[in-house]
Length: 273
Image (cartoon, rainbow, N blue to C red; front, side, top):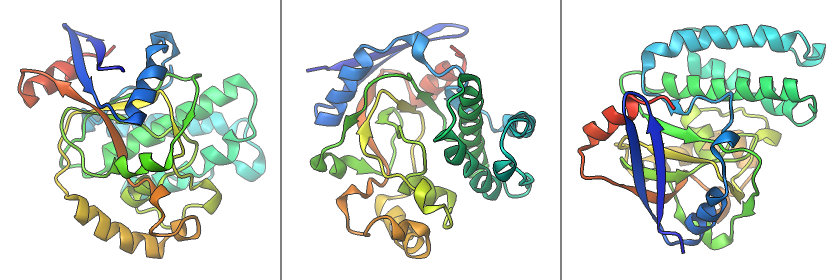
C-alpha cells in the first residue's frame, strides 16, 4: 500500500509538500500510476499554477484570441472559431469557445495541431477559473502527466465524489475530453452539446493540489445542482439518481504540514517550477 506522496516545487526556495494518501481504492490505484510517471511527461502547454493571481486574466484572454487566429489558419471552414470574446461575460464566452475543442480533437492526428488544440483547451480552463468569482481566488496546482494508463472506476468508487473542498486536499482530476456534471454546473452551461458531456469513468495520473477552502456546503451545491440539472442538456445523458453522476472530485490525500495555510500558500505562490 502507498502511504505518502511528495512533490518538490522550485522558485525563490525549494519547497517539498508531503501528502498522506487515502487508503481507498482510487487513491491507491492513482498512486500506482503516478509512481511510474516522469516530470518530463507533464503537459508542456499547461501552466500548473491555477488562479493564484487574477490580474493575469486580460493577458490570458488576449493570448487566447491570438491562438484562435492560429487555429483558424488550418481549421476547416465549417469548424472555424467565429465567436467573438465578450470581455463583459467571460463565462459565456468560455462556454462557446469550449465546444470547438472536443469537435476537432476527436479527429485530428497531426501532432503540431493537436498540441495547439491542447493549449487552446488548457487556456480556456485557466481563464474560466480566473473569471469565476473575481473577488476571491481558488489557488491550486494542476498536474497532468500525459501518456499513462487509464483505470476504470468501479461502482463503489462513485460514493467518494464530493463538491466541498478543503485546504490541503490532493484530488483526482478529470481525464476525459468533454465536460463533466460539476464543471457544467459551475459554468452554468445548460446548452452543452450532449455528445460533449462525458461522465468521469477512469482514474488517471492527473491530479490537483488545492490551497483554498470551499465555503459552500455540500447540500447547497446539491440543491442548486438539481435545479441546473432539470434545465440543462445533462438531463439527456444520465438519470438524476444514478450513482455514476460523479458530482465533484475524489480526495486521494491530505497535506501534512506544521505551517499555517497562509505560509503554505505563500511558499507555493513563490514557486514556478
